[in-house]
Each structure stands twice: as structure tokens, then as C-alpha cells.
Length: 468
Image (cartoon, rainbow, N blue to C red; front, side):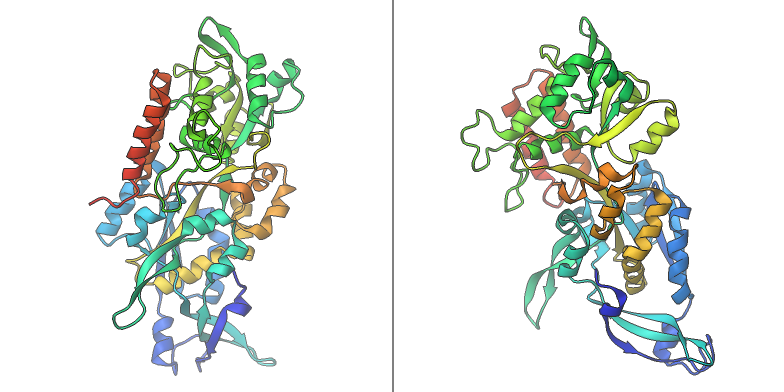
């Protein structure tokens, strides 16, 4: 993202002649400085996460009031849909990185320029504050690539048809959102349980995970008394679809082809020698942890939720996100645990899994340019630092990664951001996730993985086109 001094295309200095009043101002400037209220809807964050960045913006835009509303995650999407349909929705909304395409028709892409009134100080001896109307270039696609990891470009940039002439219509790429933070899956491990089995360091690859599970698991028949790693099922594992997706991508699965069609059930180029497609290998690997006939059996769907089991000391390892860290500390303040990078497949390129939110502007906003101007400010390095300091989250900006790598709480997650990927960019995230959960359940029920995978691929493919 270009810095402010670089993004000014022209500055139309329309100065007020009477301090901050509008007397003597041009009609255009008078309109631009009328009181405006911008609303932001989101989840998880409290108001104080945004207080400082909002106050900073209002220093140069005192005519703008910015209000934040926090909603519960389970109600957020439906309430947002209802509000937008009834023209009472927010100017700025938050979307999961997997869902911009589903919301595209309801979003306003970033304009190529914005024109906003800003308060500046003039004079050397006698200083006075005046409003100027500034026309500014917004970040280009190339500029965005310099600021954010590659995955953000894949998620936030969508094609849209635009009229380029009297009768000409072309598909162009536009920016639909900006992130502040990117979370990634990591390995939480119980120090006492690993120490007791002579495991000095947390496993770094999935083969080592299997070996550790054999040492750490305690069984009474098929009853799991102590789990090695809380994984293998769908209903009682945190974000099982993300863990399975991670395994698939690490194993070389082509999740979608160049045309955007589902391909995770196919054999990609270069995998002809494999007995099974890599997606099926990953599925079987994951469900083996909950298969009583396997050596690595250590989990089943009668056990508590994976986070609950780890907090209670009933599972030695837990695969989760950075947002789980404060939850674990709050619920188990005496638990001795560490956080390690997500396990990889030895010999394969490093792949991590990205989970984050994009800030976008509603197409129904009456102040689209101002909303985008605020978002661009919010996602700048200067302001993003303040948001991240208030929330304790990992960054989404390349320029802040190195600083966070040195942070004891964020280092593991920051170190994975540049290799983090996600893949789903369809119109029904919930349906796609349910297809993956059913894929896990049906495999554990004894279904043939090849057949189950084909059905799941067909179900997900249906979500890649808009509902009629």
C-alpha cells in the first residue's frame, strides 16, 4: 500500500476563510464537511480495539463519527443479510476470507480514487486549521501485493464486469477488502505430558506426530483415557475442515483447477505413481487418528471437544489458532503448554492454513469513498500497529511480520503467514464445510474413500456457482 505522500494525485486546496466554519467555502467543500456517521459491524473485537485508530482518523476528519457494533458470531451473517436487505446495514462490514465472492454483489470495490475533506494546519507564524478537499489515488493491485501476503490477493481481488466504452464491457480485477490480521493453524502441546514420555521437543512433521501419539496415548480397550493429538473426527474437533484442508494441500492436493472447478478428488499432474490421489491419502491419514484398527488410534467422537480436552489435560496436543491462546490461558492458568508451528510433511514445501477477516464496504453505503478512505487508513502500517497492540493478534502486513516473529506470543503464527494458504472461494461456505465434515464422518463409518470423496467434490462444486 502506498504511503499518503505518494497516493495524492492532486490536491485541490479549497480553503475555508473562517477557521473551521464553512463560511466562504465552495459548495463542494461545504458538502464534503457535513457531519457524517460511518458504521462498522464485526465480531470478536470489542470497541476499544478501534478507539485509537478512530480517534486518529477524526483528527483530520472531525466531521466523521465512526460507530462500531459487535455481534455474536452465530448471529452475524444472518443479521447482516437482513440489515442490508432492509437498508439499515453498516457502511463497513467484516467477511471471512473464504466468502468475498458470495458477497460480491453486496460490496463496493475499492475505487481508483477517493475525494475527501481533510483538516490541515497552515501558516508559519500564525497557524490556522483549514479544510482542504483532497483527491487521492487508492492502492493499486501491485501496491497491494507489496503490502500483504499472496493469499490476501487471491482472496480479496475479484473479477467484475465494467463498461470500458459506449458498448464495450470487460472483466477487470478489483479490490474488495483489506485485512488487519491473519491467523494460522499451529500445534499446542502439553509440556508435562510430553516430558513424561521423554519427548523433548514438539513434533515438527506428521510422521513425528504419529510416533508421539503412540507414546502419549492411553487406551482401555477402545476407550481413550489419554489422547495424543485431538484429531480424526469432525463433530468434536475445532475447525476440522481447516485441518483436513491443510493436510490435503501439504500433500500436494490440487484443491481447485485453473478454471476454478473442484479438483481435490483428482490425481494432479506428477502424481501418477501414487496408488491414491493425494486428497484421499490426506483424508485417510486424518481419520486414522479416530480409527480403532490403526496404531495411531487415540481419538473418537465420544470424547469432549478438542479444545476442552486439551485444557483439561486429557489430550497432549491440540491443533488450533492464535485466537485459542487467550482462551486456553483463561480457562487453564496453571496448564504448562507451548505453541509450535503446524506440522508439515517432511520433504514437501511448507504449507500453512490461513484464516482471517476482510474489511469491506457495503454497496448500499451512502459514504462509500469516505468508508474506503477510512479502511485504507486503518490498514496502513501506522494504524494497523495500534489495532494489533490493542488486540494481541498476528499481523496481516508484510512489514510487521519480522517484529512479531520476535514476540513470544505471536512468533509462531507470524512466522507462518507468508506460507499460509486457503482455497475455498465459493458462494456457500457453510455447505462446503458440511461436505468436508460428512466426508470425515462417512470415512469413519466405513465408506469407500474414493466414492465419498467424489460425492463431496460434487457437493462443493455446486457451491461454486451462484444460487438461482
